[in-house]
Amino acid sequence: MQDDLNLSVPENLTQEPELPIPSLDEQKLIVAELKRLEEAGELTPEILEEFMTGKRKPE
Image 1 (cartoon, rainbow, N blue to C red):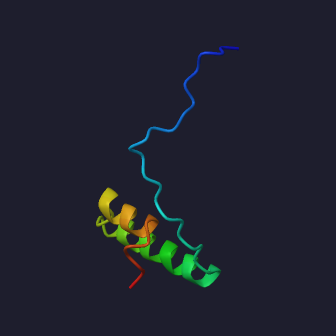
Image 2: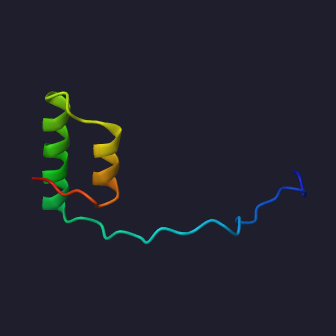
Image 3: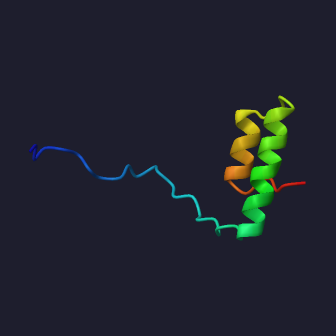
């Protein structure tokens, strides 16, 4: 085992706020919306990130 590992957190690292976990019904809506977007060929990494960060909600 190495004793010289640097396990400190960089000073410029900011912690993002924790998001509340969506209810089971909300999770089902999100999954349905993601599946719909994927089937339509409209699911992009940016849209997926918006859902994962809470910036976008299912329509």
